[in-house]
Image (cartoon, rainbow, N blue to C red; front, side, top):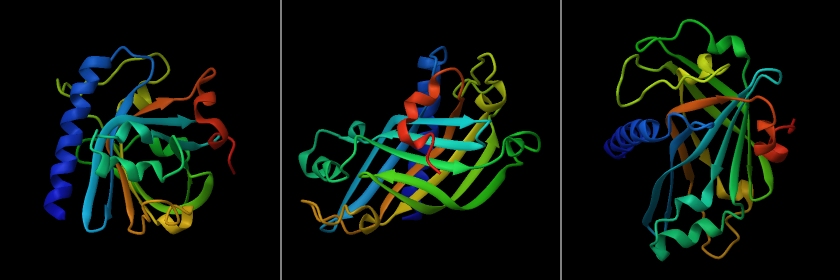
Length: 212
């Protein structure tokens, strides 16, 4: 399992770099994420670049918006269980003050925050989860992962966010659906790029933006 996760992190980092080269001038910075579970002793695993990370300074909140339908690989036996999640999107809202993003970050100096009240919305149900969020500085002058320059976003665009969620299907009533998903669902983002919320970007987060 440790070797598999090492390969996952390596792939996510390389894929994120390629995505940055392709879309560095796009208005939103997307990030790669993975989703994994086990059904009938079969591993269901997929990686996609559908993750959007946001930070809102007035609220002091970090967000993830994950488009679950994008994780379908075209293999029915692996894809159908995603329909049981009951939502097109998964949302995550994490309370964290903006001072934590400023100063003290470098390639070898990162910050990890242990958060007990990270709120997840899945299948129409909110549930608090434990989360370890690691913030690190983007490597300067790295051609694979360039740091986008956009007005008002430089502080956050140059920070990378890494975290994983460990979700119990029972908490979101997923275990009662067609594929009887009972095993833990793992969702992770490695070296994700953060968008500073401004103007009307908050509308992209729906009810997650104002969730308390």
